[in-house]
Length: 131
Image 1 (cartoon, rainbow, N blue to C red):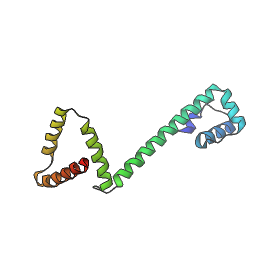
Image 2: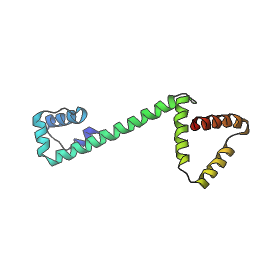
Image 3: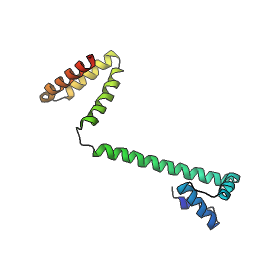
Image 4: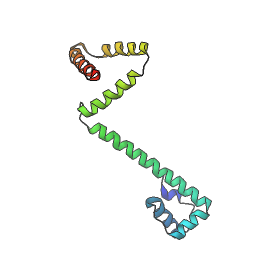
């Protein structure tokens, strides 16, 4: 949301400027804060503006998280171990019949030439969990 557009209903240029500063930085004079406290319409403008700011920050944070994940080299052990641990924890919650189905589907999804490496990984995990 465009802050200038949000402030269109405020005709006093000095008040618009103070509002803009408050929304962008959180800084305000005591007189402005008193006016804000006394004017429900201004409170509503500030609430909408802060909600828009929060939404932009959330989108930015999501973008950074995505960029960080995308920038990590594919197959990096820390990235893979996190994904594998999450998957194992989710699979452990399944009932026995669903776990059997998951196992069958997983085996079918792994190409035959990669199965020895997968068997080795599963054996190592099994040993480590057994400790």
